[in-house]
Image (tube, rainbow, N blue to C red; front, top):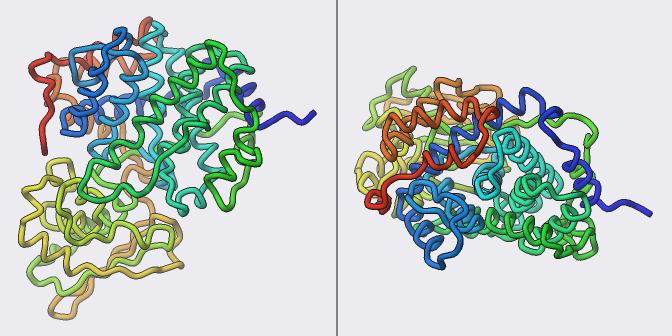
Length: 457
């Protein structure tokens, strides 16, 4: 009898342990853990983070896991839900190499909440997070780009499977139960790309994926069975979510160590915009163009992303973070595109609005990567400045250093919990494989109740 894909994956991840975790994957997960906690702490204090925290507390329940940036503990599934939203609320979370999804909001939120509930140690956590990230990327490789092009958001639709593996590893599910958990995760897969605009919609999407991953693992652990044909079945995930898929990618190289490539964001906006920001910063630093002398900016983009992020008149900072014209305008004017550059007040800036309005788009299939950008800036005197960026800052080929990631973490965490506690978290994350109880780490993310109110940017 043919073994289903879910059963093959369940066997693979059941055998996944710390001794088999490559050093490179250990280092990647530690770097991402620090980044995740900083981003989630800052995101917890935004309005979307505040609402998510309030919702997680609204139904009560057993105190199992910490709400990042709050003072309370809630059921693990609720903590995963709220923390996933917080970590996706400032557009500074990690990204995969194709800029299709974010690993940490669904996977790390589910893994940390489950680890804290169960009193897991640091090595168990690292294994669970690495396994969850691998699973999420395997599903994306099998389903994309068709899944994205049909209007489904990869982070939650594929992330629910990664979250399930992370939680399932911590529950130590045997292969039959992890197979069932995959079926239950598929039943809950969801998330639409109809998320751009002035609302908080995009921030919401990873919340259900993290929560549903925790739910799938626990239900399977309690004995609830799920469909083992969830991936390749006639009405399974791949047929439902894609027009064209490659199921073999789910189990490709399954007997060999998996290369986990995680990229990081230095700028507080959608990842496919980062290449354009790097173009703008290169032209700014090299040529120092007078902003009032810019006649036109032409952005050539690869067909994969050419028709996204074109809004020239964002009405809220949520929209600005997915606006390429605004992002390059603020980079040209201020030399930065950090969290403070994205706020509602700046959207009224006349210089930024003028530069945004001068920006046009073309499709260039000759560009080498999906996220590649080529900027041509034409000045009033006829001069042209050109910059092309294929690998943005934070990519595997152009990485952020450990010092740069630490500086990013400090800038996000210290305003919320103070510099001393931020330093404690960084130290503990660096040696998390020696941590006897993940709860020790998560308790450091708490802040006094009176301070955990959230704010509009």
